[in-house]
Length: 539
Image 1 (cartoon, rainbow, N blue to C red):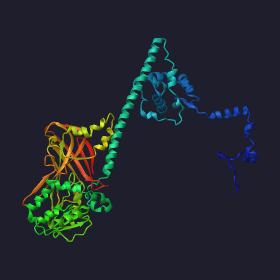
Image 2: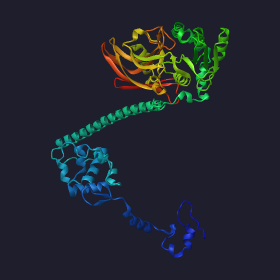
Image 3: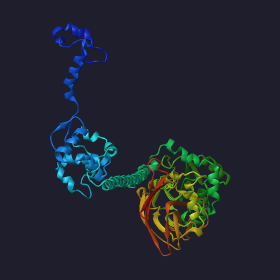
Image 4: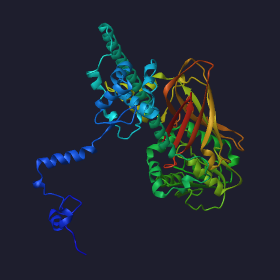
């Protein structure tokens, strides 16, 4: 096959090859041989390719928009200048007019009868009828600069018409600007809604639906749990829990006041920590106590048990309850201090349920057994200002965008009971002897009875614990703001916009609580109240 040389940057033969072709290029003169007459002939030959402008009312073609408009005036009595004048046309309305005529084919007489709203003032006429309609490229401002005034013998009337046309144009521009501002405002509102939607979508995408019966905690790998258990290897957290008298003394009083539950029984302590509950059980008369904990505190717990000469009764095992093998097949009682913020934070109850289903003998019991979560309305405007309104002016700078990321973070703090403005409402009750994993993700409606005129700035959550099953002396405690302080405090969900309420009102709402898919030990909580929805994370 013979190769042909292609000239640089061109899709054709080189000039040298062209000359070799002989007759095929005889009609093509050398570029340097073309004289001025030939160039003129070439221009005339190619002038037919120039863009032609079609009349608005007939099939005639013209070489310019001005010629087309002149023809429309003389042949069709349609004066574009007067139309621009009469209707105050700007570039957008002019485009609509041209497309309107192209699409609807009205007669020129039709336009003389238009006095009110122009029929072409619709967005549908922004779409061209002809793809390359030259009239759409015409600058209507040229008409305003060189407009022919309407024919009249009265010069004063001419001037008034000119002024009226200009006023009409200005008014139309002002109306268009107002519409544009309104459109921009709607766009910004939609953007904020979309932004909130995306934020909620991302957060909720991490949440479990609550329909699964699988144990997310049991499925976690050791490396995924390392951070959680290492946090309980720090001694400060155990000191805080042991010094929480409400917590620790409630467990002690339950065991010492109900020795019949523990006498000669095998007890399992899930998440034993320092071993305090295991030793309470041993002192209450247990035959054998098995404590299980994955954190490094288990090493100190072994020393503590030996120091108190209870190592003959208490056996401690390092590891997750889901992974270890107990020295017994079944136990009579399971005790555990598994509660987290808002009761379910950290999802340790999942491990208790796992232990119950695997090791608890028929007729056995889990303690504590009855748990409830409650909500109450908060009316502390100062708190709202400190955490929400604060971002409106930070040292003279606006940081209101921070509200969108600050509000979703649930706060854990001790509330002054004086700032509560409603009765408490129970939203969830759990019986640890029967509850399933899927029950821990829930949705509940609530009604808060308002007790004083105020503004509701937040919803607070807390939990109550009871030791009841087979107990001759029942023991219970509360983590609510009207009770003695505990290390759990209360979980506060700030509202972006405070709600004005009066005594006797009832705030109705709905709350959804579920595990975070990416981190099953954290919670995603969504509150619907006063026609608003806010999603919070507790992690």
